Image (cartoon, rainbow, N blue to C red; front, side):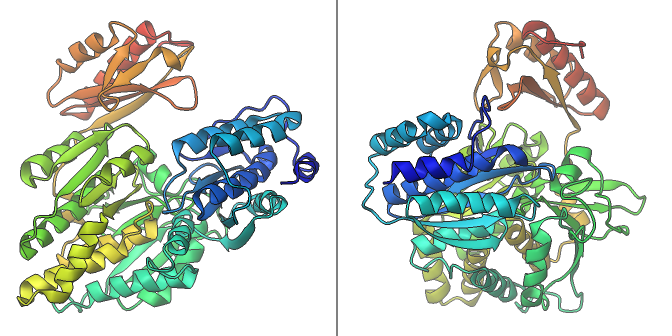
Length: 539
């Protein structure tokens, strides 16, 4: 390892003095102009991680649903999953090291993680459509090459596509071919198999309007269109030809503002969906005949999918265990519907995809979606083997068809991460197979009215929580105050949790009416302000 070359190259990617960044669930994210040094250093780190795991590692340059002027970077571990927590710490210390300390911090990581520097390294790189992304991905490549790592630059890809590439390369192509073409072929083959089944209505040529958030999803969906055109016609809006990335459009905008994106023409009862900027989240929505907007978020997506999987398992007569993983933000109605009507076990974890993903791995079939539309379904290795065996060997025609459907669903899901394209195809296949309209899907249960608010505090660390963030531990008296306020309303609950990035506390409340949910959210916000050191104007 040539420390002199590393230092010399680092000077070309100088760190702004005093800048401190934290590697979180989403990697690093900030204004694009502050990221050059981080990208170079993540190139270095990816090589070390690759040497340590003897595997291909991914580096994705994106800031997902953030504004266009931001950017970010995250590393992808060998099985397409998020970076291991101990390496998140290495990433943070490496990104924040002052120039003169860089060689020492690198050596420290090499020793702590027992990295064999003689081992070969291979890194794959992808980027989104932001103007800053190409130059920043060059800085990653600079970091990889100075440590003599090999690399392949996939250029413009969605975040889930890069996760897919990493997994394919580390399973010697067993999961699929590690090309964009291979990704399209794998997903489209499973989708076309599903939608050509005899009990799908051929008459109604299915069409879907897709808001692509003016991001990478538009480019990739355009490339994929001809693979799936016989089963689904997609009309793309906010395709990046004129609008700004994530501006007044995309899954995050639609979910948080509870209204359609700009730039999409909606007629009543038409199915529409929105991706986010890097195409790893999806939400559906429609206008009813009275022109009212209806959002179908991650909770309802998880419900549709779990219900379908449970029916297939009953049809096959196979007792694979299925579990749904949610966060405290999941609407209470969805939890009740799954547990009481569908008899599917539901588990709650802390907010953040890595917690959901980890819990979902405990089941034969683990379904997880955050309310924001980020999620997927994970099949254990044993479950996958069993399903493929049943699809091949069952003699009863009905049971065999159900097993074959389940096998195609398994192939259609991106097992590595939430993937808007993959999730969209699964949803469209299920709606076709069950002959469901978007209104019928929406009517599975009625969401309880809810409200989310933020409270500014002097120090977010005064608040600590337990029970998957549903109960407050400190400061004393706050949980008692929340519990007393909740008792005043029907079907109500509320929780508070500190933000992971800024000194604010997030408040969630739901109740039997919007008026009561709003009133509860305001009262809980006031309790937080008074008991947890609120600053500025009282809520």
